[in-house]
Image (cartoon, rainbow, N blue to C red):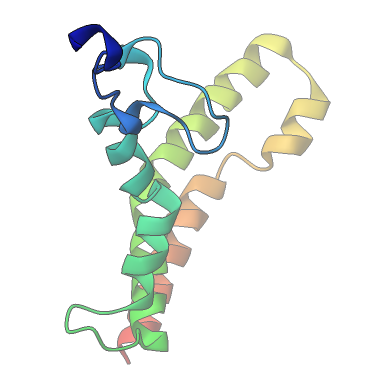
Amino acid sequence: PPDATPLKSKKKNLNSYSPTTGTRQMSPFSSPTSHNAQNLRKRPSNAEQNNSKSGLSRRGQPETEEDAFMALQSKVKNSLVRILKIRANLTSLQALEGSRELENIIGVSDLSRILSAEVQKTQVLSKE
């Protein structure tokens, strides 16, 4: 008789079960295996990207000491303007405060010219 055979249940999607917890996903939007979550996990962090780029040159060869030095020198040169602006702000703050402690932290006011000269001198020496 037709009543004797069990009703065929719908095949449940086994992908919705977590092998770790044995529980089933309630909402498709909360899935840790969603497309966005997978992309976030696969994408390297900024630190990893910087490490992988800094270790190899354009041709995939190990970075030479000279290349590393030139990269550092470029960073120093690029941050010189920012350093000088910060120093100027601190100097104007010192003038407002009239504090000797702040002067000791900042140093002499002519240091900005000395700092620029040091960067230029280092560039000249590295080219020789």
